[in-house]
Image 1 (cartoon, rainbow over the protein chains, first blue to last red):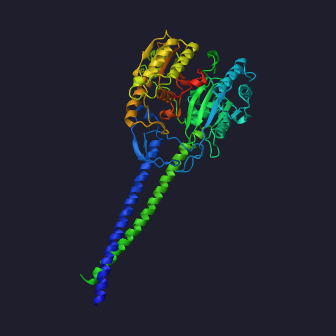
Image 2 (cartoon, rainbow over the protein chains, first blue to last red):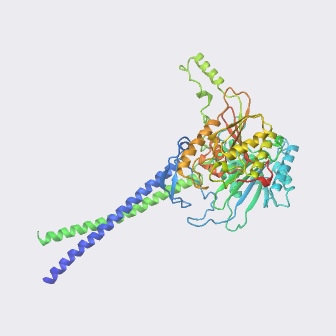
Image 3 (cartoon, each protein chain N blue to C red):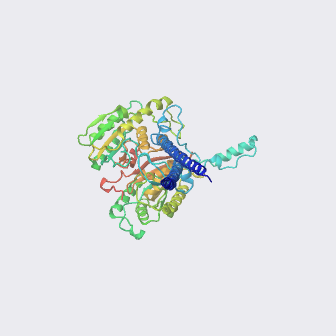
Amino acid sequence: MQPAISSQTFGLGSIMRVAFIVGAVVMAAVLLLWIRIEQGHIERCASVVERGGIAASITAPPVHVIVHVRNNNRSVGNASTPPGRRRWNYNWDYMQPPNGQEAAGTATRVILMIRHGQYGLNDGRLTEKGRYQAKLTGMRLRALNIAFDRIVHSDLERATQTAQLIRAQLADLPMIADPMLVEGGPVPPEPTISYWSLPDRNYFVEGPRLEAAFRKYIYRAGKTQTNDTVDILVGHGNIFRYFMLRALQFPPAAWMRVFLPHGSISRLNILPDGTVTLSQFGDSGFMPPDYVTY
Amino acid sequence: MSQHTRRLVRLVSALGLGVGTAAGFYYLKGGRSSEDETKNIARKVFVDKHTHLGKVLASWTTNFEPSVKWDSNWDRRDPQYMVKPPKHPNDTTEQENYENKVKEVTPKATRHLLFIRHGQYNLNGTSHDSERYLTKKGREQVECTGKRLKELGHPYSKIIHSNMTRARESAEIIHQHLSDVPIFIDEILQEGAPVPPEPPIGSWKSEAEFFRDGARIEAGFRKYFHRADPKQHTDSYEVYVCHANVIRFFICRALQLPPEAWLRMSMYNGSVTWFTIRPSGRVSLRYHGDAGHMPPDLLTTN
């Protein structure tokens, strides 16, 4: 009997010990679970906050909500997000490396967007003024003394002529005609204007094409690109206004709020980390005042 | 208590513990699926916002709804809200009176605002603003800008400048080319931190700075950006000499673009940014950061 009793006593002690350990594990699990639920709730709140309107940030001083935000494409850790903020999408061109990896490229891509010169509405060709504007633009580009890589232009007459007049001022640059860059309506403008409109079908057909052109030319440098590049695009007012708004992640419908003078130079800088800056839009100060036309 | 009862109690408690552990594991699994749900929500938000499939990229279809509507009463000067509405809308004379009064307060003129960024300045002067004076290059830059403004030949009605040394000096040099134009100073146009920028780039600023400067720069916007007064009969051109952050914030606000985007733009020293405010309240940006009037070797962003 003795051994049996002693083993029974031992068994009771070990059961109590196991009970303690298992109890602790269960409590830890419950705690962990609770934290997860809380975290999910906070993230849902954060995404709601992010999706809010911008009005709050204008009228009220920014009240900062400190939340843990798990960013899909970039680990930012604890971010301080005022209500209504729209976060910059680093993966806008789908070239953002996966979480935690270094930027793929090291080079900056500069895009110079040049609107064609003044043209005749009847024949679609540059006027005398328009030709002179293009010449002045070419001279300005030459004076800037940048190593340009290529000229890509819309194949409409006014843009082709402008591109040729610009190229005449620059040393042998490769010149590419691209029908993707011809003029069109990107999206119905907001606000609309009373004296001018395009049929809905224009936006329906041309809008996706302009977006395709944007994706073709506006992207960050990849791994294989080691040197900075400067592309000259010669095209039209609507398309470049759309490019600018899309590149800066502004609502594209705002395109009628900005204007581009004939022959003007606008500069987008696409940095390897996926940020984009606009250093000038519609630069035309190199023209005599009466040549600044819209 | 018999040994049987003790054994039963032990059995029940062991069973309880087992069930508890199983429940714990079950809940843990539940926890994981809650995380999946969170991921799904995050993914949906990502798709909506970042690939814009929700709104923007689908916007060329015929059911287009602009993501941000233009607020025509952004300056709270929409004439229909400037007059007391009729008490009895069906009373034709009252209604006529109201409409006449609205007509009276409807703006007739266009306002042109030309914002000039100061010239390059001494960045080593960190202790006091008076040390942050224009460099030789900075003086040459705004010299060019003064010439350009004169050449543009607009009937300027005033020059208003920030009280910081670099802006004051720039305005004085510009004023030499537009000597007939009255010149004013306004502290509200000082440089500062408008709102925390998105993406979060640029130099670090404390929340206190955004809190203080943000409200002041917004006040500056409300002071100077509005459609013309109904008493103004001819188009006006005003020159403002101030700072990059202020001007970039004004671009976003005036065009009703997200204000936290201000740091996505940059501008050269001495460059010109031209806004037009129509009698209807429509605002347009004619160009931003135009520095084409300067020889390329003068182009700096400080």
